[in-house]
Amino acid sequence: MLKSDGLPAGTITKWEWNAARDLLAGGFYNFKLTFCHTSLTALTDTYVNNYDGKTPVTVYSRNPVNIPTVPSNQWFGFGFDKPFAYNGRDNLVVEVWWVNDTNGGGNTQWNFPVNGRCCFSYIVNGNPQSGYPDKGRVSYFMHYMRATVSPSAVAPTSLGRVKALFG
Image (cartoon, rainbow, N blue to C red):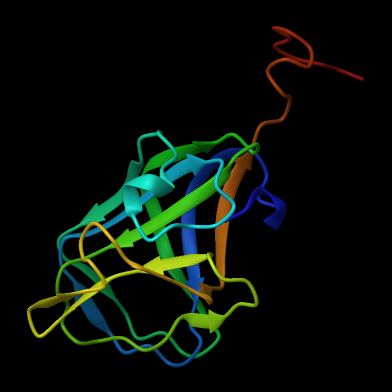
């Protein structure tokens, strides 16, 4: 996600996706959602390079995570185990990982006019594809996503150590 996408600085507590078509209920094993600040404006095919020298933070992890049936154009997602402090200055790498699933699913991706907004790798019949798990394929695909953010009421540098302000 680019900072120009309009995500404000603050604490992200939930992340959701919009289903492009009906999603069937299913489970995803060793599922984790990680976030990482980055200065990159386009993803590379090597995951660790996208972190830009920073360390990704796992905000949600389940084994398995179960997704209910989701009708087309409806939102679904997760409240975080560990909120993420987004600084509002950097771009944000959002990674979704899992190993094997129960064949639920559908489609949450949309074509996006700019390459470099999505990088993915996968396993087909036990065979790693696209360099899994270290490398992926960069594409035009994008997910419609939304975040729940608790913005900072006052920037920490704007008024010093003011505890309350009355007008």
